[in-house]
Image (cartoon, rainbow, N blue to C red):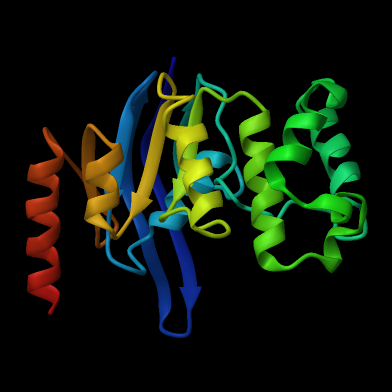
Length: 221
């Protein structure tokens, strides 16, 4: 079971012409692997995550997903704003062909939305949306979890609950974490790569990736 990217290219149009965000990127994530991708702000990390999740398509290249891949954790862009939290749960359950009753209690308890679970999500704060999205991400079993930057959901107690549920209760799963925070990558990853100027360079160890990442920052300072 793997995720495999081959020669992935993604460009965006700007006023000064096309800007290449991902330049013939190759990447393989194995089952159970914890891979961190370091890169400064604007380096294309979020674009890479969106392409892996299927939210966005590359201009060229191939993507093979031989694992069940999550959406980026705490991403709430797929919710239907006029539906309640419960109705969104039912809708997503149909997409993934699972019984919504089997995960309802977990989502309701974990998200801690109280009566708002039965209110339209357009009335939710950004924090409430993130809690619902995170709870749904954990309620549906994925082989690989995509994490875009450090997960900041709720207060310190709720954040700790999220970290335990993800990194302890699902420690046998694959994780792909993109961040500019080297400490977070070091804490949760066994391998790492650096994304710079559209190129992805993978290193044998997290420490070596961190050293090269710091060199990139110093060169751009």
